[in-house]
Image 1 (cartoon, rainbow, N blue to C red):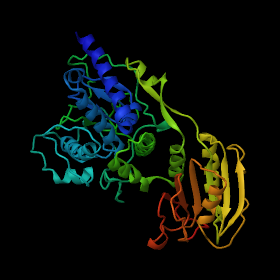
Image 2 (image 1 turned 60 degrees about the horizontal axis):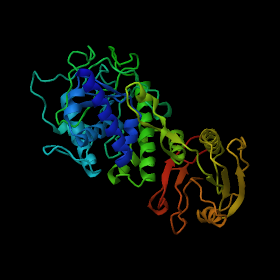
Image 3 (image 1 turned 90 degrees about the horizontal axis):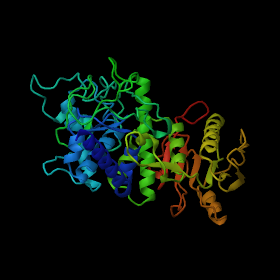
Image 4 (image 1 turned 45 degrees about the vertical axis):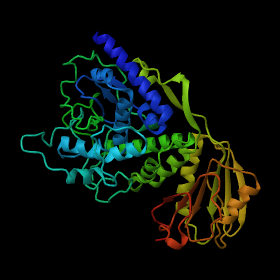
Length: 460
């Protein structure tokens, strides 16, 4: 009976992830990056950012839409870094805060929550925690994490809000586990020996805690042990790597959802600003260019993370990308060092994502030079041409006249201009700003912006 329950539960989890991929691809693709395994020590379903664990009995007794909501909530909580930000806060109170601030996003995305579920909108998990009453003495202590990680290493004070805005008073060692490669977790894919009965959970796993019954978020595991068991929490380096990996996973998931026309509006706003203030401009540039690559689900190539657990789920595969356009504002005092850093990063990313071609325009008040390169043929340096006035329109007009619709357009500029095209182009535009952020008179009317901090050779 226990073996049958485990098998049927695995099939139900697989079916729920598949349903999310079809109906809620943002959440489904986030779930797809994590291994899944049974864990009788969980009340319902949980994640520590490395894997998803579920109670076979709860899965067997629970409606599919409730399971889907729980999967969506735990991956959303990890994407918002709730598993790295608890610090020394009380674990049960933190769990309640996490559920309160994610329920609203899930509700707005179309999920059905339990009738008695509360949702607090527009505040961070830290703010929700502070508003909740303190637990009575003798309740769950603040030092034991609700997960297998031995505690979060993050100093969570002032961590990013859950609507994407980021207070600046983050602790020095607020970082987390995971290598971040390819947006995948590095947790074990080996199935648990758990047969769904009691007593088979990890000896060191603290008590499960799911106040609302919508899934629990556990602390990020330490980097040393396979299950994260250990005396120390994740190091600062580990925490930073995992938070960046989840940021990149969120953007990839949003890109997939938008391609299917199923990106929830509230989620899109959250992703757009989530943690951007802590990412290096090179990481942002790489992320935006990677997002432009065509990615989709492939059922013909099963996801190897789930095969050992008896789950047949698709993999996310990239099909490469069309041409990309790079417009370089050659007016005024173009900082050579900053241009060289941008160009070096562009060349490296281009060789990785393999666009059909890279169209490079040099533009001041007019197009001064146009060239097209294969991704491997970009020159090591670029000879700047121009130095006249600034006008953002000629470069876009040239692309339109040539019938070029790039997968993404990168515009390297100091933003010292307000002459934008009258209509937004039909392709994504990334303004790579090497000066101070623009004011109201010259702020970009559309597209995304990456600000490169002023440095030697750049304007103050």
